Structure formats: C-alpha cells, structure tokens
Image (tube, rainbow, N blue to C red; front, side, top):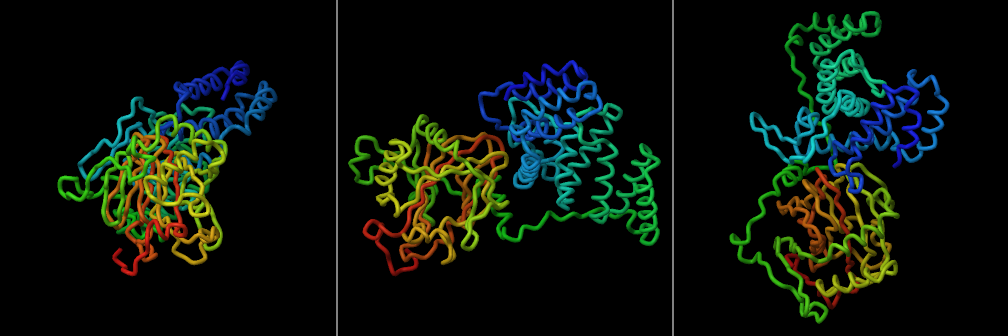
Amino acid sequence: MSFGWMRTTLWISYSACERFYDKVLSLHEDSATPVSNPLLAFTLIKRLQSDWRNVVHSLEASENIRALKDGYEKEEQDLPAFEDLEGAARALMRLQDVYMLNVKGLARGVFQRVTGSAVTDLYSPRRLFSLTADDCFQVGKVAYDMGDYYHAIPWLEEAVSLFRGSYGEWKTEDEGSLEDALDHLAFAYFQAGNVSCALSLSREFLLYSPDNKRMARNVLKYEKLLAESPNQVVAEAVIQRPNVPHLQTRDTYEGLCQTLGSQPTHYQIPSLYCSYETNSSPFLLLQPVRKEVIHLEPYVVLYHDFVSDSEAQKIRGLAEPWLQRSVVASGEKQLPVEYRISKSAWLKDTVDPMLVTLDHRIAALTGLDVQPPYAEYLQVVNYGIGGHYEPHFDHATSPTSPLYRMKSGNRVATFMIYLSSVEAGGATAFIYANFSVPVVKNAALFWWNLHRSGEGDSDTLHAGCPVLVGDKWVANKWIHEYGQEFRRPCSSSPED
C-alpha cells in the first residue's frame, strides 16, 4: 500500500500526521514478506483501521479537513475494517489461551509461558514489537464488549499500567485514555465479583475526572455493597475462562499444541520406521519418496519432500486470488464458525498441468483413485493470525452431511500437504491418539479416516493448532470410499 498521499497532507498537522506516518512506516520495513509476528500484524491492522481514522477526524486536522478526508476516503476501501481488528484481537486471546502466554510479556513483544515461578520462552523474535497502552486497551475492549472478563481484565490491567506511565502524553490517534481503561477495568472487576478492586479503580478514575456523575454513583454503590458484605473487602476475583461447550477435549488439545504430546521415538517402537517408498509403482521407481511412519493406530505417515519449493509456491499462487473464509458442515449447510479460522480455495486439476502431476503422485503413493468423483478437488488453506481448526473429524459423522452430495461415500482418507513452514505453532494434533506432528515444509501427512469396515475411526479426531508465528499453508486431498473397493478391500472385522 502506498502512503504518498498521506505525506502530501503532513503540513496540516505535523505533530499528529508525521508521528502517525512514522509509526506505520516502521511496520513496513520488510514489506516483501508476509507478516508472521501476530503482535506486528495486530498493531498494523490497528494503525490502519482505528488510529488513522482518529487522526483524520481529529481537531488537529481541522485546518484542511476536506483534503485530508478526501485522501482517506480514496484509500478507505483498501484499509482493514473493524471486523479485521476485532479478529486480530481475538486471535491474540486465542494464542494467549492455547500457549499460556503472559499478557505482560506480549505487551513487551516477547512470547513467554509463565507457570508458577517458571518462565519459558516459546519464541524469540528477531525484532521486538511492543504494544502501546492504547493497543492493549483495544484488545481488552474487544473482550469486554463480548462480556469476556477473563480476557478483558489482564489486557485492561496492562493498558492501565502503561497509561499511568505516560499520563499527560495523550496522542491524537489513540482510541482510549487512562480514564477509559480505568472505567472499563472497574466494571469488568465488578462483573467478575471483585467489588473491592472495582471501588479502588473507580476512586482513581474520579481523581482524573471528578465531575463524572456516573462514576460517582458507582462509587456509592460499591461502598454500600462492601458495607453490607465486609468480607468482600478482601475478596479476590476467581474468573473462569469462557466455556467452550463444543470442545470436550480442550486440555488435551492445548497440551498437544504446547508440547507435541507423548509420541514415541522410533527406537522405542521398531514398527515405526523410515523408508524409501515406491508402493510398487513405476511412477515412483526412479524417484522414491521418503516415508516416515508416525503412528500405527491410527495409521499416520509423513512423506518428506513430497512437493518442491516451486510446486508449493505455485499452488499457493494459484489459490490466493480465490481464498475465502473457510466453512464447516452444519447439518445440510456449510457455515463459517469461530472454531475454524482460516481462508481456503478449491483448485480443479484443469487449472494447471502441475495439479494433474500432483494427483498422479498422490495416486501412486496411496494406491487410491484420486480422480473426481472418487476424490475431491484440491483444497488450499491459509491460516492467518492465530489461525486454527479445533478438534474435528475429516469424515462425515452424520448421514445428512454435505459430503455425501458427491454420491461417492464418505471420506476414507486424508492427504494433507504442508506448503510452507512456520516459526512456531501450527502443529497437527491427534487428540485421542495423543500425538501431534509439527509443520514440515513440503512434506505430506496421510491417514485413514475409516476402518476397513466403513466405520469412522474415532482415533482420527485431530486439530490444527493455532499458528503462533508464521504463515501456514496446507493443501488437502480428500479421498472417498467409492472407487477404492479393489484398492482397499473392506473387512467385516471392526478392528481392521
């Protein structure tokens, strides 16, 4: 994005516009590569959505407001919307939860897990991107507006702390102030049951804004509540993390994302091995694929260097113009949901001859028919800031699932290709089997979703862990039952 038009209007108010221009420009030092640091991504979205709007509509810009607004309106359609800012804030909260990140550390630009007195560095960025008081306020306010005081309180606490340190240095582009942060934090504590903290913060608010009648009434209310229940004076808020009813296995899932689970090493189980795979196919005879057996039940294998760098880049390039918010099957419909945050696109093999070659390679390795209608088109998925897919099955678990519209049965197998690397996070976690596989660039992960009897394999419940740092791309090839009768014969035994 060009910021030349912004520079031409700097004379309107040097102090506000020049400062804001420098702040945005500093985030574009390496504009040729995708933004991988979630703190940088959130900050950049906020600068271009909230901060710049505040500068444009400020009193400092009143000398030539029309020229400034005209320039802003020309660029507005290409700037992030509030939904993007809200999504980025929620992504930071998601990373905070899954990886047990410390909010104070995040505000300083470091990714640390704090458990008791132990501090673990999960990722060391090459350059620190610290958050301002207003940045922290914005994250806390997003949680506050959702009634999520579990997340709102630590972010608003950090905002209050930073605002206190810079009180009197309010900036034009800021959305909030110390008074705003105190106001929101006081009510969040009240809602969480800590009346004592709510009273203390409300009294502090009145020091800065003594004429605020609403806050004065709140102080009287809190004093009365404490007088009626003196034990509330020392009460500490025990705030429960928001419940996620659809996620029964949250603790296991998050543990696998953090530690890669308890997967055994190859020397412990001899049947887990590495080999050069041809699958007796002439297609692979002169160029076998390196195969690593990751797990036996469910059977999961990793094919290393399945695609080349140029092939991965081409697949991403073909899909990028068509990316849309990913959906999941809900009854007979497909809907976007919070437990799947990504963008995806479908590529027919007629789009490029390379995709035909890719299908031949998948067919040779798996021995399965991967041509429609016996397999779906290639789905390319991009996981952005905090992108994830919580525990789910690839195969249909309901007879009304849209997967059956192909009239080729259920998804018997998944072939997932990693089209990029990530710096941290993004592993594929198998929940009930208790193991996870990190992102291995250019490799492909293969597993059976159904037993030979046709029943779904419950041990294939899996998840895409949130991307902590990086830009994760995968390509999925889902293969269906029909057409595979003589390639993977069925069995009457439920153990097969």
